[in-house]
Image (cartoon, rainbow, N blue to C red):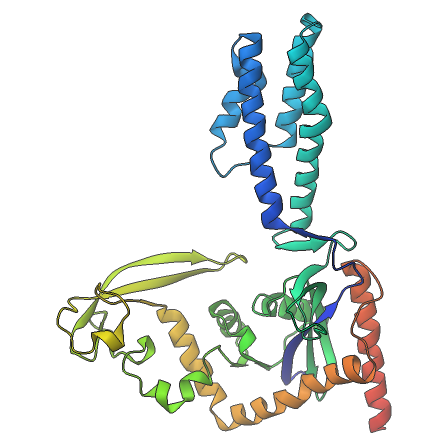
Length: 381
């Protein structure tokens, strides 16, 4: 019926060697060190030939900036320039040595690093035996040491415990999977379900905005939904969420009656390109405040960061979740998706993909989804 869509995800280990990992940060460090080595060689070559360094692209490399990388094309241009110089002076041993080092060491390494950056596609890691797999923490950890394993984040949506849609993602966090999943579902089915039900892993400003834009019923928790319901947190006068806000003058008031004045804002852009804003407020004067030791951990005046739009969206989500219908859907969510994962991972013992590559993994999981739906239909018949 596409009425109540229960969304959740699980991590399935990839058919890849867990020790053949490549980390984005490590490759970036190696690449930066290689860039410095290239620049040092170019300066030395310039001293050798005692000519202007423009033919070696030295000026271009210096202008790229601290965070810019030297490209393979630039290194190839350097090699050609050195070869031209050697053609005029073939007996120059120092220049020959530099030419050999560029061709045998620097250029191959630069090509290797660029290939790695192309494979990452915004991820932090990948496996050498399955480039589409990302290293992430699995619940199935036999050694109990938090070991990272190559895997895929499988997102499924169910209704009456039938799998309605699924997507495979390389990123380990669920927050960034909801919008791509729902877009894929709309493309395949032609429309979206009436209500989306999900746990706190999906409760972000970007996701709430998308659900509101699509006019969907949002029953998605945020990360502090249960935490803020506890009495000690609900009655804590020092928490930012509990400070009285005066919208007319755009300021907060602390327990001591002091005002927290607006001092500026900052724009944030997520990896998906979503823009959000954070506003900063600072107390006018905390000197001599009897609550200072409980209110803050610094000698400076207290400063807080607030997202008014996120707070507004969280209030709407809280109202939905605490409604009579919300209570029913929240209790139903626990048995909806988890039973499906329980059958596939527990009863059928499917905890590791047999095929490699994202395209083949999608086919493999698709067959499992079909098998689950047929098995459930047969049991009900």
